[in-house]
Image (cartoon, rainbow, N blue to C red):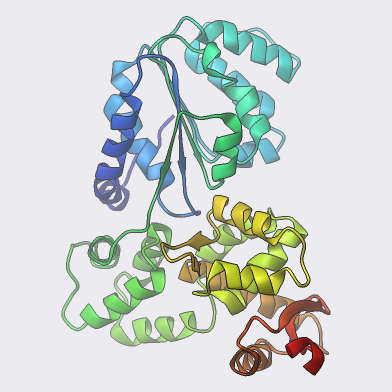
Length: 373
């Protein structure tokens, strides 16, 4: 069932109304069963958009089902619960005990195939989850709409969705208004807090989760507390946000993690081709790995083919490195590592040095004069 929305969340739902309307327009493109994916980095507001959609169009459907936190429940071995919850939401009279996932898939297909259904699967991260819960279009009756939220665009491609909608960060004005509603319970800052509020917005990079957490943390606090908090954020990431972002990092393969950290520390703003030339010296299939990182909302490639990354993902990467460094007494510090990297980039024009792994920590490795020629 949907949770009751508080006033802060209600405002945010209003702020993503244009995104919800964009998705609703896509849903109107076909009277046949339609599968749509909404993707973006953690904390970007995917769940808020689907809540708004569910509230707006749900009453027009014969049957509705909203399954939240699919990833978390699946990891907790609650596959049976998810399938049974979906069956129950479609048919409240159903009481049979079904022993296997495959048997429940057959029952779900039979229950859904003649019904016009609105099905929302929130926070999906594995193809098996989609196979178990929504199969394919043949499971559903005419006019059915299936909406999937995920941080992994590649997952949506694999499942063969009809449309994909990427969620973007809030702009400065939206961010400031959202933060102010959390910190001051009004759309504008209190006297003496305007500049500090703008600093918070800059730190958040338009990520709604960060704005919500900081708005709550700074509510009713004095100016000196705000200044102290902002000073700490320059050195240590916001833990409530860090934990969410680290989940994405922890789900990566070892090779994807190494390349993600390489990009975060050394290659932000660099042309993708130059980065590929550098990383391919020590890493195979770099182009594929970067593409997968982009699909997983951890890296973006701008219109000039330069690599970019959200500021809070960069902060998370630095903290991961700091944690690794603190666990190894003979480790090179992050500051020393970056200084060496900057010097090498100036001397060798970046493409003539490579990043390698030393003691589990990413450090630049000098190349010989012969290699530099």
